[in-house]
Image (spheres, rainbow, N blue to C red):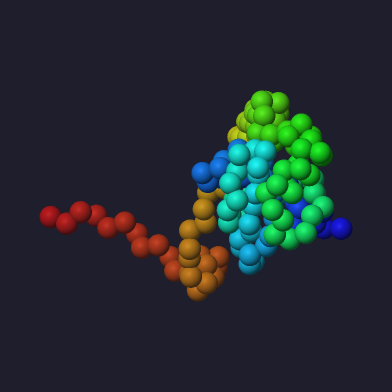
Length: 159
């Protein structure tokens, strides 16, 4: 299945940017293609409409009807321990992992480019530089081949 985290009522989401950045909330209703109504009573996110692009969907889903009250959402939120289960995805361990991957990729790319440059220099040394051929018309080549036109003798200096 290509998508396992769909925008649906009850989906717990992480607010990636905006005034509520870094908080967990729950989708309570879908307004249109780009906006949803969210509520996070336990994480101090007031009931509001947010753009879907500003949310990162998590794997957690709470079962309730569309447009559920904040009290209902809070009860389900606390019973499922979303705060404990849905750890903030921007924690220090994830940060360290991303930095380690970047450092590793930087080292690999540096070594790859060094070897590529070294190989380019070696190839340049191996190849012989051929003197470019001077363009001569076909008739002139034939004349030179059969020595049709003799070179004029060098004339002496005139006084």
